[in-house]
Image (cartoon, rainbow, N blue to C red; front, side, top):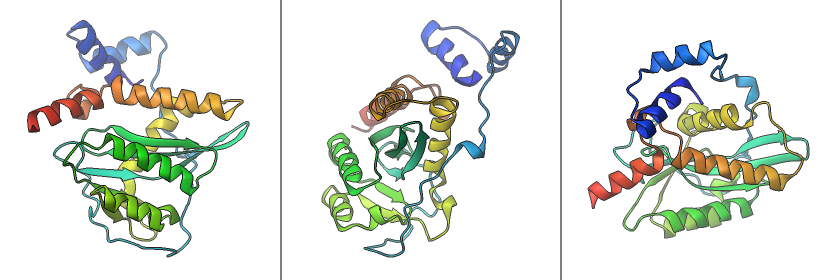
Length: 231
């Protein structure tokens, strides 16, 4: 946890009036430090296999700003290398609320993983919501079953241009935080224990981890407030 998250937690939970710089100084004096992201910690899974199904235009055009939750979202697959083998996370990230609204943790980056994620996404989607969901041009996102599931749930599909990783930068940034805060320097002996801990971290991300861009709220708090005000 960075010094800003510590300060926000103190202000939200204890009502303490404390500046971010003061917390950083205290952490340094106590021998605590914040994790610094290293690109070598990030192993990106590449699912591109050419045009193997239906492709879509880049609706977002790198405009990741959203006025509220369930308007603009991103998805991708990231890989974790562990003692027992590899594991894959396929989440849907809400650019407005900063919430991971749906996900699947699997030993294989297959269509079944996407179907599990899509089922969670459909169950979580508020009535009347019609978000744009952005991805790269991975084979999963071109598959007829994936395309059909989004269309049936009123979700507009958007795709990065070939070879333009910056088109999905917002989702990649989330992967970087997960690798820094949850994964770096740790290992698991079994897939089951890894999955349980990763899903616990996602719950922490959504319900505990306060964010500066959300004015010190957690993603779940921000989403609930925004939907309540819009009702």
